[in-house]
Amino acid sequence: MVASSTGVVSARTVAQARVTAQSVVPQKTTTTPTSTLVVLGDSLTWGTNFFAKSQSRLTAAQHFERVLVDSRWGRRISGLTSTRYSGNAALKQLLADGIRPTAVIVALGTNDVAILTKRREYTTVIQELMNTIGNVPVVWVNVHRIDSATTTRQSQRFNATLASVLSNYPLASVYDWVTIAKNDPKVMDPDKIHLTPLGHEVRTKVYLELAAALAQRVSDITTTTTVAPTTTVAPTTTVAPTTTVAP
Image (cartoon, rainbow, N blue to C red; front, top):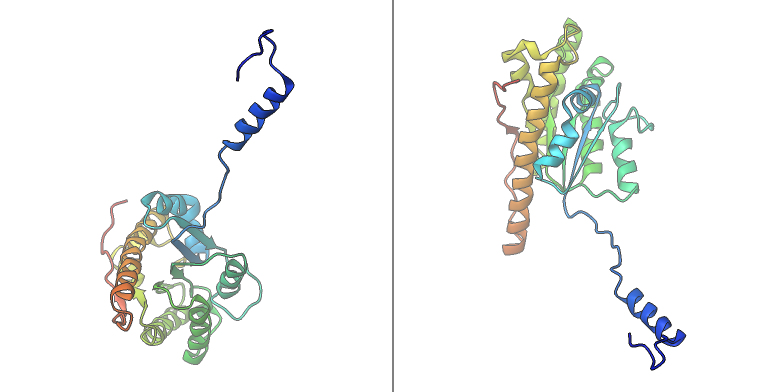
């Protein structure tokens, strides 16, 4: 900006300078994350998030651009309309809000085995949630509940049903939490349902392990789809558990 011969800057020059300055102000833009991990859980996952900071640690691991840990006390798999008490309803709400999961960790079933008793009932709710999730990689953590003979038996029935149902979904697998809990009973709370502080830490490390595996699976699928669209991903039924995790 140049002053006139009298040393006074004209109003027109000032106005032009303002327009020029405004034109180079960077505009704020929002971008949608290209990868999102959703963790659906009940009180066990709520505990890992509250006590062991699972969401912040999963985010810090940077396997996915965005991580959402959605967990509630008393939550079941499906069959209810409340987003608080139904994992399926909660996921549908996330989808309605524009969230598009790239991969999902499911840690539900602990409350279902105290209410449902038949394989066909387990099959129905598992399929309902899997169909809502859609065609993305999924790992479902199985159930270890030993507070009574009934829930122990029904947990075993649920886990067998879960493995059978997920075998029909090529991108889904089961994580064997039962083996970890049996090998290290100190992860279980005295109520034989929930987790101890050690259990929350172990569970969070499991989620970190699963996030890394899922990110690799997503990458493999993307590469395979790009190179050879007709190639399918071989089904897997179980992700090998870590037997001992340092507290």
